[in-house]
Length: 287
Image (cartoon, rainbow, N blue to C red; front, side):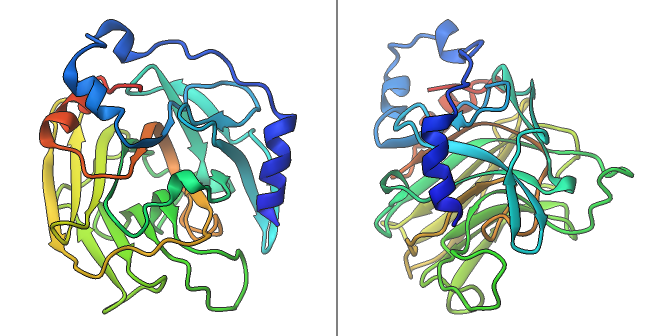
């Protein structure tokens, strides 16, 4: 099982470098919005590490392990397809999804939203199509979308996924109520902005359990961006699906060829003012 391998890697991989820069170092760290952004912050991956080690969450020490899918039911821990590159907040990670690379970790209590409100926010860039990455399928920013890799068994462990839809060139956010997908099981929000490849985008996806809504904000480094919303009163499923960054469905498909940076998870919905603080005039923020 991949989960067992992740536990071993926590002990074996101590190669995490010191972050080079934080936007919060040069901003007013005592500002009320900065303090509020740390409230109910469950995970924050700066994703600025270099080398072959895991990429570590600053809140609870959850590791994102670099993996490569090498075939049907075949995986290896391999960081050769993930590397530090300039992004929104100092360095982020470029993922060579065309070769099956991605990050993943077993589920953890820090990811338990108890079926209530939650928010993911961070940065993504999708590479231009090329001979090395002639993608014609969707590409995933992050997902908890299944529990068992490479099986024909129906697994009802889908929670949410945030991904780039190739056909429309738009970002989408899908939430499942019961671990299944499709009508009566899940709801999708599609943001109207067409994604320009190679450009960094600020993404904020929220399930608002109190208002029975799903929200998806997409911005750039120049603009904070608008919010697309859909009503959804069936809640959000929570189960034992892995968290995958740069792939979905326990990393078997829809890999990302592109960049990810400064990704955080909150067990609440953030205000517009908090969102603007996190966006930080296009420079992003590390917490």
